[in-house]
Amino acid sequence: MSLVVKSTSPPPKTAQDVLTRGFWHENPVLVQTLGLCSALAVTNAVANSIAMGLATTFVLVGSSIIVSLLRKVIPHQIRITTYILIIATFLAIADMELEAIVPDVHKAMGPYIALIITNCIVLGRQEAFASRQPVGLAILDALGNGTGFTIALLLMGIPREVLGNGTFLGVHVMPRSFEPWVVMMLPPGGFFMIGILLLAANWRDLRKQARERAERAAAAKPGSRAGRPQKEPEATLV
Amino acid sequence: MSDLFWIFVSAAIVTNFVLVYFLGLCPLIGVTNKSETGWRLGLATTFVMVLASLAAWVLNSFVLATAPFLRVISFVVAIASIVQIVELFVKKTSPSLYRELGIFLPLIASNSQVLGMTIFQTNRGYSLLQGLMFAVGGGLGITAALSLVGGIRERTEFAPIPAIARGPALVFMIAAALSLAFMGFAGMGAA
Image (cartoon, rainbow over all chains, first blue to last red; front, side):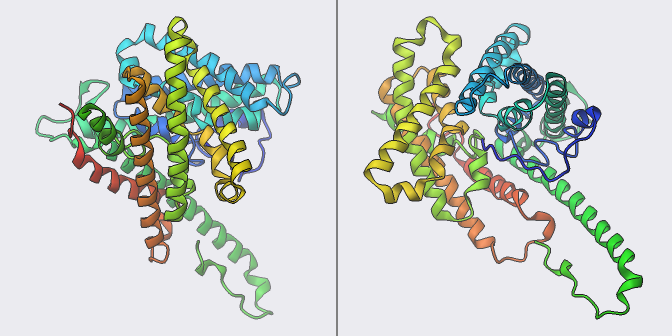
């Protein structure tokens, strides 16, 4: 759990932006690679992924509200400890709720519910956003990031359950002749899946960079004829 | 005795904390540029885990029996304090080691390996000795995983990797291959 929050994109301008940027462009899992422990561990079934996503969103929203309300009261030196205690309180509530509503899923998720507390997304949002913004924006930000986390979990959970077990939410969806890829349900499947998703994210980034470079080149073309041909920096694509 | 041995083996290899339980993936991406930093962080984690296992056992046997819902909070606070104490101790006794571990020590407080270990230990009802064995085994397993990934990443440093696969994506593909290899141990000592 690191507290490094990458902020590559400009700060949001509107409330809607605060809500929606976490869905995709600043997706906590796929773009910022945060909160991977729970993202990989529970996504071998769609039901578990949904439960984990909702529980994390609940904890995130609840603690963001409290942190935002108390942001002028919490002393700077002990803020992290305070955040952790607030998060742990909501975690205990979520844990008991899950146990009461969906005992099977709760059992399948095992210790990973408790590990929501070490999920970097939750603490990261408190430090980076909720502790500096009014309650309304903090709730929107928490909802956006929680939803983004759930989307990422489903992106991993759906292929893993469909390919690994031939089922979707426990219902058979693949033809009878389909031989389940058991490896998708096992730990290596989780690593493969997140690897593939990150490859896709990289691919999107590279295409975007290439497009921007092409646009810059097109814009600079008329003026550059006078000077010497510039060295292309794109050869070193690190 | 064989019971303790199998707890050790299964924590270290069969259910490797990093590659099978997915605990502590942030350090896996963050500090495995070199094999050496990998095993150094792994050993520091092992040390903290042994102390945390002890603390968790004390808390479980004397405090938490009447208030199980406070488990996570008290474990987190205990782990954070242990890391703080270890940091002060190392700083005082061996400044050179402190400089080497400097950045890593506070990181241990906030990663899921130590907390996960204490929760597994509680759920499985390990005794003090079993818990300590579990902590040592888990820690050494983490050390092995981090240094293996670090070693492979060192080898890939000058390899012609396509731009699309650079960064975390490659680390996860390496981890997937290693995890697949560790699956070979699955079922060992389960009897």
